[in-house]
Length: 298
Ligand code: HSE
Image (cartoon, rainbow, N blue to C red; front, side, top):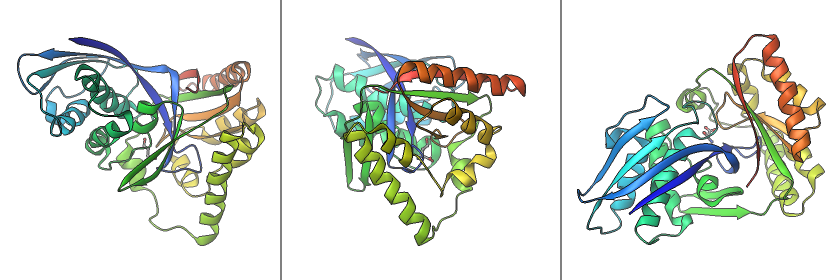
């Protein structure tokens, strides 16, 4: 009658794949406890670690859960407790973790009427509340694990992508809050054909590299000449952190989701930890508070 779940953090976009690519971090994330209740409907009964609305309709977990319950009959309701570790506005899928966690947990308590892929569309309603846009590039990897591609969002077509087993992510979060809606509002609405060609070449290269365990191809493909030049201006120390990541062996580095977190991917834990140390030094030297995670991609 009760389930305790881990709700992983995620890195969306992965440089070239704006709004379509994402990956799941194995060890960074929130926790949730969801229990059945005699009272019908959904109630958020506790939030620890963040100042977020308790009203179901104003809470991303609540909204995602309600979207799901519209499509399935139940005799009972649900109470949700949320224990946040992922900060809102950090760029590692804080709202996605709560939205995906709610629908995953309720689905388990109901005996799995939906597949994990089917849960994505409900979790997207939480993303819509959080950012005004129902993107799936965080909720999909959060629910399916590993790397995912949102080939199309209407009708929804999500593909789980195989990836090499030794892939690690380092993510540094300079402690400023950047709202996804703000980081979207600065983007241009058109791209040049030249940039588009570069970008889809890289998306194809990245997916091919992941499937064939070709770390060098993955590295060559982790570039973004459309979104990153605009958004990186909002992130303190971005160029230096990225340069440091490459100098310390990263395959690639870029903005995590809509920022301000910055990710680096590497082969092996040792390199990922070396990058974390070097990134920490950069922010220590300019006295900027930060949080840093090293996690296997899983
Ligand atoms: N693809 C979204 C964006 C992810 O970059 O705006 C937000 O986490």
